[in-house]
Image (tube, rainbow over all chains, first blue to last red; front, side):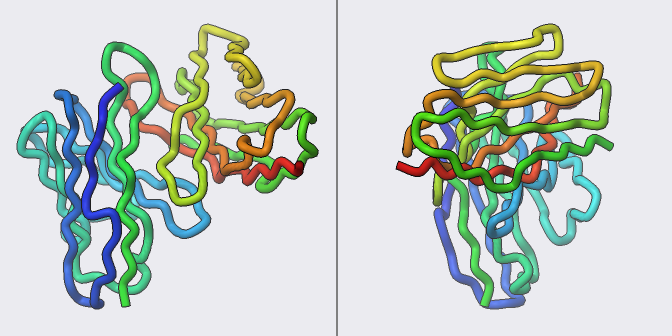
Length: 115
Length: 112
């Protein structure tokens, strides 16, 4: 299955600033997904990122707040903009399994704390 | 849209006993149902999955069953061990979208 490198692993940020999270995959994948996992909660899909097109956002998430880039088939970034303490969460990227196997592979996550 | 309910939210079992976690989904077009295990501070890891054309799948101590008519699927862990302690998430995937809708999670504690 694909190996994902996600960084940073954690950060503490001041409110009002922005943080960009990067995910690098060791193989080409069509779709990349960005999830948020609030403390003790489940995983909520933020958006789906396809190479060469704008990301598709889920209800409750907007591009101005969570801009996404997908410049090629192995890389994507998620920016959390104008942060507030409510944005404190774990952010994970994921990709579909390669080779026809099922199941997402997740990045190691970015633990964001906004103060 | 798809909604996935998961029960129980917490589950404590004695080592060696079995654990069962149940999920129900709402979208009859969902056709793939993975289960993930997330240990504290780590990423979710796929442990088993089932597709809609199969009723049951087993991998050593874990098994998943699917009832398409009732729209529910279950994870069964037998002979539980302390290292099975983690949060388990089910998910349902709508055919053709690749979007995973996760359940709310079950915190499993295996007591030694």
